[in-house]
Length: 476
Image (tube, rainbow, N blue to C red; front, side):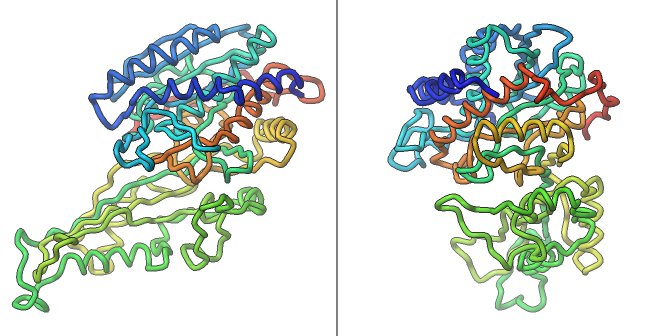
């Protein structure tokens, strides 16, 4: 059990303004990975914020180049080779700041408090979250002059653009990143009030559908009825993939099963319990499943954009082409290696061989098994610290590079998020809730304290000497 004195220090750090001030300094760096010109800000954030923070934890720090994108930063603290090693992860980059689009005239690079909401780009994703873990480690080290475990902290700078180069870096530096468990924070809690532990993430495949029939548009009165309309063709083609009620109509795009352990874990989980959340539509998607099963344990095919001609200024003409971008969000157990062939063949079988299919960005699905000993251990620690039940999700509905840690490094993964679904993390008005930050620092401190202070009543999960999986093939 975490000492009460350490709990009070964690609460004091979060409530005194110290956490807010540190986060404000972090938010001030416009580390937008989608803008190459922001590379200077990214480098400054690594050099001026993260490197000093890791040095304060007694880490040796290495910055590594990334041929595929922005650099990586690795901090290592080795207290004793016989102790377990914890790998932590965070990402320094943020999405576009959307300057000028925030309410109340807020600046995305200035942390602004409005009651419990702390507005600023990166406040929830991911600067506020990796600050929680840095602060918890710092509190533990100051209290007992040791962590009680070895620490490796990995930061990347391109998570928001698909983590380019991360899998290759991990595969090439498997010894550097060797650990017993990953402890990281990103993504949302189940809801604002519920401490949450999740074990992985859904994957995603982007599909672009093009119907490019002719270079010109033709008058709909003179040619309607004899020229194929690409927009009508495209909507018909999409309806063979996913119907108007969100049900996927291609069996190959669905998982092979919903494991009983996953169903059991989600049995008591409610979706959209935070004020202001939209209500799940009972008639949408796989209605034979609960909302939690649909969101965390099943696949969805979403139309992200759809267009032909000028939708704001339509004219009386049949357009020459139409395009849609869809995204398959999928869970472990779905075969997506041949998704282009599957979709192309399906469309042709339904008479839509004129629809071109192109696969865009792809991120893998992964999860740590629910029965992994580290999961039960962490739940016990967190519930004792929180004083109430912790929601355990097999994976979040969104995507993270969890597969790098499970599949490349062979680690069990424990994600302790410090945000919530309504945080607007990729939109104007992104915010961290001060209440979650306060509880998050306590929970993270408790988890790291338990890692470094196992007892006969609560030992660490028994692990074999860290055995790395075979080197994976280079990602395609």
